[in-house]
Length: 352
Ligand SMILES: [Zn+2]
Ligand SMILES: [Zn+2]
Image (cartoon, rainbow, N blue to C red; front, side, top):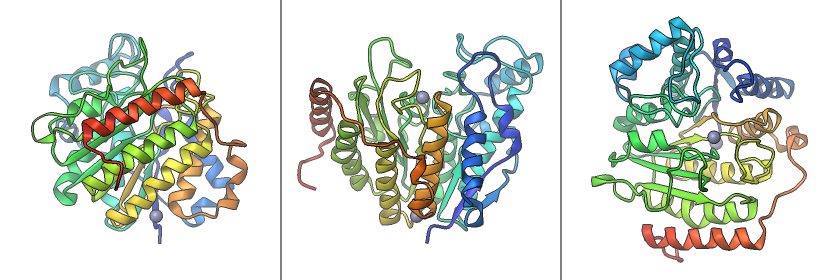
């Protein structure tokens, strides 16, 4: 069984930056509409988040920062970081309800196998600052909250950007495996996420970055996924999976130059879904975040929810891109080198 909860609040739509800012909540509403049209909600329960207390945010953020967000949220002007994340009136409440959704996703796993919060996944937010359109880091927060109950938590971040905030907040946490596959290139945001960043102290080896060159298509991406990520997960044996999916690794994304198709994305999700059933009694939380080609992002998210909820593939086949994408030989070679390096650093043998 794949009993699935879909966490949703209409207030999610308030988290949308004005003007020509690329981060728009239309992605979430488009995905939800695609799901409604296909009858998903006959099989998936919609659950509303319970607003969390501000105190809970202090598990991953400084009080000064939380107060700062509140202040700028009332004023409705200025930036929460050096220029990517503008404050708008009500951004505090809009952020809080989305973070509450991720906490709700964890809570409902007592009754469900899988929980989806497309409103979550703010992986760039740091302890004392916003970054890259992210205000509060629900990914790190949910991992912290889950540790005690689940023991070993794996975060798998497929967003096209490095999950730098999550990594920084959990860098020395031995209970959480932090995996991020992302584009890595000179001048590309956020600039971190190299293979050499592997964690510290007791958590050494529990940060796994897969830095990918521009132009990486399904073929090379999935090879890295199988050869490195899956092996690492099998070593760690997580009891809970948290997936930051994003949609900006898609070939149509205007900000990221990875070249995944919906089919490549889905292969990765299928694999994670299988591993969750193998190691964690299915316990899996699926989060959204980046994605600036709104149509592609909505299709990726809908297809992924269908996969984990066990909805018949025929219902969603028309949402797929025609075909898998491939990388040029030059890019493929570069990815091979990354795979080789990561296997060495993380002690992932060829036999498994
Ligand atoms: Zn399942
Ligand atoms: Zn992103």
